[in-house]
Length: 203
Image (tube, rainbow, N blue to C red; front, side):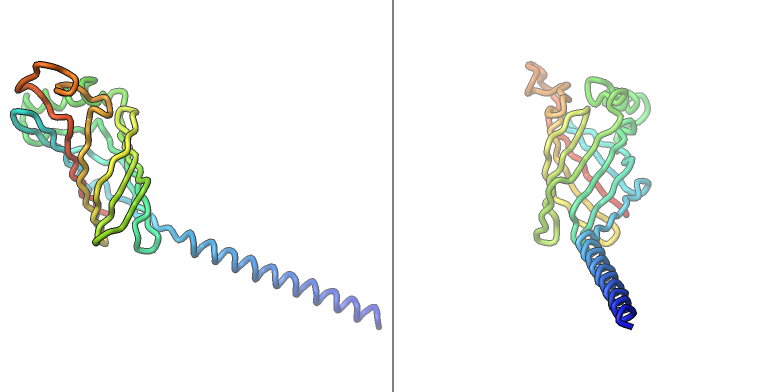
């Protein structure tokens, strides 16, 4: 009888310890889930638009670049990250037609500018995000022609869309063609170092 009681006690103790372990494991998993509730919003690359504008002494040109992939990361309703890939082979001029358009498209894709035969992709990875006044102050690593530099910009996000305007110094990415910062006597053939990207993202 004494042996049976001890055996019964031992079985109850083991069962109780297993129950405690299961409860502890469940608590840990719930805690990890609560602190890693990251939401990924995938960008609709077909509906999203990246518009570029380049400036020269005698005027400007504009066009588009297609996104290959893109995601925004959230913790709850707060933006916490973003990763984007642009397809540089899709550089397209929209303010010209015919031979003039073909000539500028080809020149922008050449080694004078973005060298897309070698550097087909440009990358943007958010590294720091601060929420302020209904918008986000974002810092990120931008890679063009295999060269990475930090950029800063503001982004406005709604339920199913996001907008941002980026000003980029092309010379930091070894795109120096026509730059008065590196070449003398360009006069009215000079192309300004900075160009703009206006980004409209659709989720």
